[in-house]
Length: 271
Ligand code: AMP
Ligand code: ZN
Ligand code: FE
Ligand code: FE
Image 1 (cartoon, protein in one colour):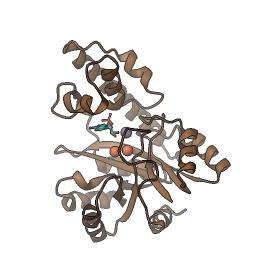
Image 2: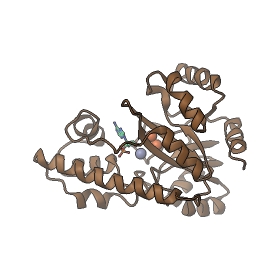
Image 3: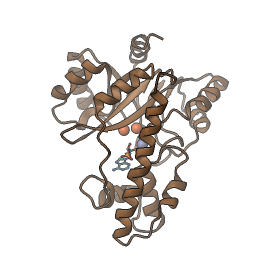
Image 4: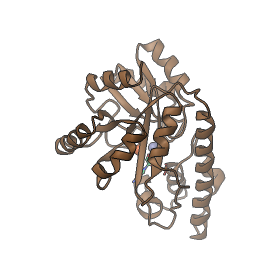
Protein backbone atom coordinates (compact mmCIF):
# COMPACT_ATOMS: atom_id res chain seq x y z
CA UNK A 1 0.00 0.00 0.00
CA UNK A 2 1.67 3.11 -1.36
CA UNK A 3 0.56 6.73 -1.80
CA UNK A 4 3.02 9.04 -3.52
CA UNK A 5 1.05 12.30 -3.57
CA UNK A 6 -0.20 13.95 -0.35
CA UNK A 7 -0.38 17.40 1.22
CA UNK A 8 -0.18 18.61 4.83
CA UNK A 9 -0.53 21.92 6.66
CA UNK A 10 2.97 22.76 5.41
CA UNK A 11 1.03 23.82 2.30
CA UNK A 12 -2.70 23.54 1.58
CA UNK A 13 -3.50 20.23 3.27
CA UNK A 14 -5.77 20.16 6.32
CA UNK A 15 -3.83 17.65 8.46
CA UNK A 16 -0.57 18.35 10.26
CA UNK A 17 2.24 16.09 8.97
CA UNK A 18 2.12 13.72 11.98
CA UNK A 19 -1.68 13.48 11.76
CA UNK A 20 -1.46 12.74 8.05
CA UNK A 21 0.98 9.91 8.78
CA UNK A 22 -1.31 8.50 11.49
CA UNK A 23 -4.25 8.62 9.07
CA UNK A 24 -2.09 6.90 6.45
CA UNK A 25 -1.20 4.13 8.88
CA UNK A 26 -4.87 3.66 9.73
CA UNK A 27 -5.66 3.46 6.01
CA UNK A 28 -3.16 0.58 5.81
CA UNK A 29 -0.38 2.40 3.95
CA UNK A 30 3.22 1.21 4.23
CA UNK A 31 4.82 4.03 2.21
CA UNK A 32 3.77 7.66 1.91
CA UNK A 33 5.35 10.55 0.04
CA UNK A 34 4.69 13.99 1.50
CA UNK A 35 4.53 16.34 -1.49
CA UNK A 36 3.64 19.79 -0.20
CA UNK A 37 3.60 22.75 -2.58
CA UNK A 38 7.00 24.50 -2.68
CA UNK A 39 7.91 23.29 0.82
CA UNK A 40 9.64 20.41 2.58
CA UNK A 41 8.91 21.90 6.02
CA UNK A 42 6.61 19.01 7.00
CA UNK A 43 8.98 16.21 6.10
CA UNK A 44 10.94 15.91 9.37
CA UNK A 45 7.77 15.71 11.47
CA UNK A 46 6.21 13.20 9.05
CA UNK A 47 9.33 11.02 9.03
CA UNK A 48 9.51 11.01 12.84
CA UNK A 49 5.85 9.96 13.03
CA UNK A 50 6.46 7.37 10.33
CA UNK A 51 9.43 5.89 12.17
CA UNK A 52 7.30 5.48 15.29
CA UNK A 53 4.48 3.78 13.37
CA UNK A 54 6.49 1.66 10.92
CA UNK A 55 5.57 3.62 7.84
CA UNK A 56 8.18 4.88 5.37
CA UNK A 57 7.87 8.59 4.52
CA UNK A 58 9.54 9.81 1.33
CA UNK A 59 10.73 13.43 1.28
CA UNK A 60 8.85 15.02 -1.59
CA UNK A 61 7.58 18.30 -3.00
CA UNK A 62 5.12 19.55 -5.64
CA UNK A 63 6.01 22.59 -7.71
CA UNK A 64 3.17 24.26 -9.63
CA UNK A 65 4.35 25.72 -12.94
CA UNK A 66 2.99 26.91 -16.25
CA UNK A 67 4.03 26.05 -19.80
CA UNK A 68 5.38 29.13 -21.60
CA UNK A 69 2.41 28.96 -23.99
CA UNK A 70 -0.10 28.66 -21.12
CA UNK A 71 -1.46 25.65 -19.31
CA UNK A 72 -0.59 24.42 -15.84
CA UNK A 73 1.86 21.63 -15.12
CA UNK A 74 2.65 20.43 -11.62
CA UNK A 75 5.96 18.68 -11.01
CA UNK A 76 6.52 16.23 -8.15
CA UNK A 77 9.92 15.60 -6.58
CA UNK A 78 10.89 12.49 -4.59
CA UNK A 79 13.78 11.29 -2.43
CA UNK A 80 15.01 14.84 -1.94
CA UNK A 81 18.06 15.29 0.23
CA UNK A 82 16.70 18.81 0.77
CA UNK A 83 20.15 20.30 1.29
CA UNK A 84 21.38 20.72 -2.30
CA UNK A 85 22.95 24.06 -3.25
CA UNK A 86 20.28 26.77 -3.36
CA UNK A 87 17.42 24.24 -3.28
CA UNK A 88 15.86 25.65 -0.11
CA UNK A 89 16.65 29.21 -1.23
CA UNK A 90 14.75 28.66 -4.46
CA UNK A 91 11.80 27.01 -2.68
CA UNK A 92 11.67 30.01 -0.33
CA UNK A 93 11.62 32.25 -3.40
CA UNK A 94 8.68 30.26 -4.77
CA UNK A 95 6.84 30.71 -1.45
CA UNK A 96 7.50 34.47 -1.45
CA UNK A 97 6.08 34.61 -4.93
CA UNK A 98 2.99 32.74 -3.62
CA UNK A 99 2.54 35.45 -0.97
CA UNK A 100 2.78 38.25 -3.55
CA UNK A 101 0.35 36.46 -5.84
CA UNK A 102 -2.04 35.88 -2.93
CA UNK A 103 -1.94 39.56 -2.00
CA UNK A 104 -2.66 40.52 -5.61
CA UNK A 105 -5.63 38.13 -5.70
CA UNK A 106 -6.97 39.62 -2.47
CA UNK A 107 -6.69 43.15 -3.94
CA UNK A 108 -8.59 42.06 -7.05
CA UNK A 109 -11.32 40.48 -4.95
CA UNK A 110 -11.53 43.56 -2.72
CA UNK A 111 -12.01 45.63 -5.87
CA UNK A 112 -15.10 43.48 -6.49
CA UNK A 113 -16.34 44.56 -3.05
CA UNK A 114 -15.64 41.19 -1.45
CA UNK A 115 -14.60 41.90 2.14
CA UNK A 116 -11.66 39.49 2.50
CA UNK A 117 -8.28 40.59 3.84
CA UNK A 118 -4.75 39.37 3.31
CA UNK A 119 -4.37 38.71 7.06
CA UNK A 120 -7.41 36.47 6.95
CA UNK A 121 -5.95 34.47 4.05
CA UNK A 122 -2.47 34.32 5.57
CA UNK A 123 -3.85 33.02 8.87
CA UNK A 124 -5.38 30.06 7.00
CA UNK A 125 -1.93 28.88 5.91
CA UNK A 126 0.65 27.37 8.26
CA UNK A 127 3.14 27.12 5.45
CA UNK A 128 3.07 27.78 1.71
CA UNK A 129 -0.01 29.88 0.92
CA UNK A 130 -2.08 29.10 -2.17
CA UNK A 131 -5.37 29.58 -3.93
CA UNK A 132 -7.11 27.08 -1.62
CA UNK A 133 -6.46 29.46 1.28
CA UNK A 134 -7.99 32.36 -0.68
CA UNK A 135 -10.91 30.05 -1.47
CA UNK A 136 -11.38 29.29 2.24
CA UNK A 137 -11.50 33.02 3.00
CA UNK A 138 -14.12 33.51 0.27
CA UNK A 139 -16.22 30.80 1.91
CA UNK A 140 -15.69 32.37 5.33
CA UNK A 141 -17.06 35.76 4.30
CA UNK A 142 -19.99 34.10 2.55
CA UNK A 143 -18.99 35.22 -0.96
CA UNK A 144 -19.38 31.59 -2.08
CA UNK A 145 -20.88 28.45 -0.61
CA UNK A 146 -17.83 26.20 -0.88
CA UNK A 147 -14.24 25.93 -2.12
CA UNK A 148 -15.25 24.50 -5.49
CA UNK A 149 -17.52 27.48 -6.14
CA UNK A 150 -14.69 29.82 -5.11
CA UNK A 151 -12.48 28.30 -7.83
CA UNK A 152 -15.26 28.22 -10.43
CA UNK A 153 -16.40 31.80 -9.93
CA UNK A 154 -13.25 33.61 -8.87
CA UNK A 155 -9.97 31.72 -8.82
CA UNK A 156 -9.71 29.64 -12.01
CA UNK A 157 -7.76 31.18 -14.87
CA UNK A 158 -10.12 33.54 -16.69
CA UNK A 159 -12.13 34.33 -13.56
CA UNK A 160 -11.95 37.80 -11.95
CA UNK A 161 -9.85 36.87 -8.91
CA UNK A 162 -7.21 35.01 -10.89
CA UNK A 163 -3.64 36.29 -10.96
CA UNK A 164 -1.02 34.55 -13.10
CA UNK A 165 2.10 33.10 -11.50
CA UNK A 166 5.50 34.63 -12.27
CA UNK A 167 6.90 32.62 -15.18
CA UNK A 168 8.31 29.33 -13.93
CA UNK A 169 8.38 26.41 -16.33
CA UNK A 170 8.05 22.67 -15.70
CA UNK A 171 11.60 22.18 -17.04
CA UNK A 172 12.88 24.64 -14.42
CA UNK A 173 11.01 22.70 -11.73
CA UNK A 174 12.58 19.43 -12.89
CA UNK A 175 16.03 21.04 -12.75
CA UNK A 176 15.32 22.45 -9.27
CA UNK A 177 14.25 19.03 -7.96
CA UNK A 178 17.46 17.51 -9.30
CA UNK A 179 19.45 20.21 -7.50
CA UNK A 180 17.62 19.09 -4.35
CA UNK A 181 18.99 15.59 -4.89
CA UNK A 182 15.63 14.19 -5.97
CA UNK A 183 13.90 12.65 -8.97
CA UNK A 184 11.01 14.35 -10.77
CA UNK A 185 7.63 13.14 -12.03
CA UNK A 186 4.96 15.07 -13.93
CA UNK A 187 1.82 15.27 -11.75
CA UNK A 188 -1.75 14.45 -12.92
CA UNK A 189 -0.84 14.88 -16.61
CA UNK A 190 -4.10 13.75 -18.24
CA UNK A 191 -5.31 17.33 -18.81
CA UNK A 192 -2.13 18.43 -20.58
CA UNK A 193 -2.69 19.08 -24.27
CA UNK A 194 -0.34 17.28 -26.71
CA UNK A 195 1.41 15.51 -23.87
CA UNK A 196 3.69 13.59 -26.25
CA UNK A 197 4.97 16.91 -27.64
CA UNK A 198 5.69 18.56 -24.28
CA UNK A 199 7.45 15.55 -22.76
CA UNK A 200 10.73 15.46 -24.77
CA UNK A 201 12.21 18.68 -23.31
CA UNK A 202 11.15 17.61 -19.81
CA UNK A 203 12.76 14.20 -20.26
CA UNK A 204 15.87 16.00 -21.51
CA UNK A 205 15.79 18.10 -18.30
CA UNK A 206 15.75 14.87 -16.26
CA UNK A 207 12.09 13.92 -15.78
CA UNK A 208 11.86 10.24 -14.81
CA UNK A 209 8.20 9.72 -13.86
CA UNK A 210 4.66 10.28 -15.10
CA UNK A 211 1.84 10.25 -12.54
CA UNK A 212 -0.33 7.59 -14.14
CA UNK A 213 -2.19 6.01 -11.22
CA UNK A 214 -3.79 9.26 -10.06
CA UNK A 215 -6.83 9.56 -7.84
CA UNK A 216 -9.84 9.50 -10.03
CA UNK A 217 -8.18 8.53 -13.37
CA UNK A 218 -10.22 5.75 -14.96
CA UNK A 219 -8.78 2.64 -16.60
CA UNK A 220 -8.78 4.18 -20.08
CA UNK A 221 -6.84 7.23 -18.86
CA UNK A 222 -4.34 5.03 -17.03
CA UNK A 223 -3.89 2.93 -20.18
CA UNK A 224 -3.30 6.03 -22.31
CA UNK A 225 -0.75 7.42 -19.84
CA UNK A 226 1.00 4.03 -19.61
CA UNK A 227 1.38 4.10 -23.40
CA UNK A 228 2.62 7.70 -23.59
CA UNK A 229 4.92 7.32 -20.59
CA UNK A 230 6.20 3.97 -21.83
CA UNK A 231 7.28 5.54 -25.11
CA UNK A 232 9.59 7.83 -23.09
CA UNK A 233 10.61 5.11 -20.59
CA UNK A 234 8.99 7.12 -17.80
CA UNK A 235 8.15 5.40 -14.52
CA UNK A 236 4.37 5.29 -13.92
CA UNK A 237 3.94 6.83 -10.46
CA UNK A 238 0.73 7.49 -8.61
CA UNK A 239 -1.15 8.75 -5.60
CA UNK A 240 -4.30 10.37 -4.32
CA UNK A 241 -3.35 14.07 -3.99
CA UNK A 242 -4.94 13.84 -0.55
CA UNK A 243 -5.45 17.29 1.02
CA UNK A 244 -7.61 16.23 3.98
CA UNK A 245 -11.18 15.02 4.40
CA UNK A 246 -13.63 16.31 1.80
CA UNK A 247 -11.18 18.14 -0.48
CA UNK A 248 -10.42 15.74 -3.33
CA UNK A 249 -12.75 12.76 -3.94
CA UNK A 250 -10.07 10.09 -3.44
CA UNK A 251 -9.46 9.03 0.17
CA UNK A 252 -5.91 8.68 1.50
CA UNK A 253 -4.42 5.46 0.09
CA UNK A 254 -7.50 5.07 -2.09
CA UNK A 255 -5.51 4.50 -5.28
CA UNK A 256 -3.44 1.38 -5.90
CA UNK A 257 0.14 2.15 -6.88
CA UNK A 258 2.25 -0.84 -8.00
CA UNK A 259 5.20 -1.68 -5.73
CA UNK A 260 7.31 -1.81 -8.87
CA UNK A 261 6.72 1.92 -9.47
CA UNK A 262 8.19 2.71 -6.08
CA UNK A 263 11.13 0.34 -6.61
CA UNK A 264 11.94 1.92 -9.97
CA UNK A 265 11.66 5.45 -8.57
CA UNK A 266 13.93 4.51 -5.70
CA UNK A 267 16.47 3.01 -8.11
CA UNK A 268 16.34 6.14 -10.30
CA UNK A 269 17.07 8.22 -7.20
CA UNK A 270 19.99 5.97 -6.32
CA UNK A 271 18.47 5.09 -2.94
P1 AMP B 1 -1.92 27.53 -6.49
O1 AMP B 1 -0.70 26.67 -6.43
O2 AMP B 1 -1.94 28.58 -5.46
O3 AMP B 1 -2.17 28.05 -7.88
O4 AMP B 1 -3.18 26.60 -6.12
C1 AMP B 1 -3.39 25.43 -6.85
C2 AMP B 1 -3.95 24.38 -5.93
O5 AMP B 1 -5.32 24.64 -5.72
C3 AMP B 1 -3.90 23.00 -6.55
O6 AMP B 1 -2.69 22.37 -6.28
C4 AMP B 1 -5.05 22.31 -5.88
O7 AMP B 1 -4.64 21.83 -4.61
C5 AMP B 1 -6.05 23.43 -5.67
N1 AMP B 1 -7.08 23.52 -6.71
C6 AMP B 1 -6.93 23.87 -8.00
N2 AMP B 1 -8.11 23.88 -8.66
C7 AMP B 1 -9.05 23.54 -7.75
C8 AMP B 1 -10.47 23.38 -7.79
N3 AMP B 1 -11.17 23.58 -8.92
N4 AMP B 1 -11.09 23.00 -6.65
C9 AMP B 1 -10.39 22.80 -5.51
N5 AMP B 1 -9.07 22.93 -5.40
C10 AMP B 1 -8.39 23.30 -6.51
ZN1 ZN C 1 -2.77 21.61 -3.23
FE1 FE D 1 -1.21 19.32 -8.31
FE1 FE E 1 -1.02 17.97 -5.24
